[in-house]
Image (cartoon, rainbow, N blue to C red):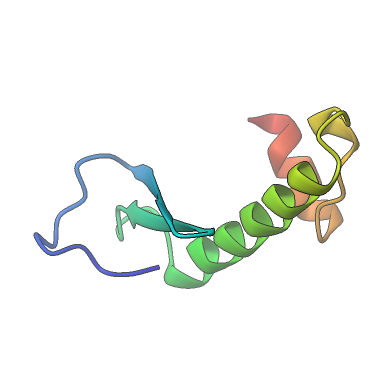
Amino acid sequence: VLPTAQGIAKFDLALGMAEDGDALVCDWEYCVALFEADTIARLAASFELLLHQCVANPATPLSEFFLPNRTERTELQLW
């Protein structure tokens, strides 16, 4: 999670992704009036865990993957 060069988020929350060799680089841009840095860091960590699970088990439905805690699972279901 890095600050943006322009200092102002265009959207409430945006995720940019790009390949870098064998890695996937994620750039999280967010409105600091709506989100705390810790919240975005937790979201990024959960997203990374989800991506690892998807790659390891491509035939598994997203709803069956494990998220770190009950609060995050509940938040995901509300979205």
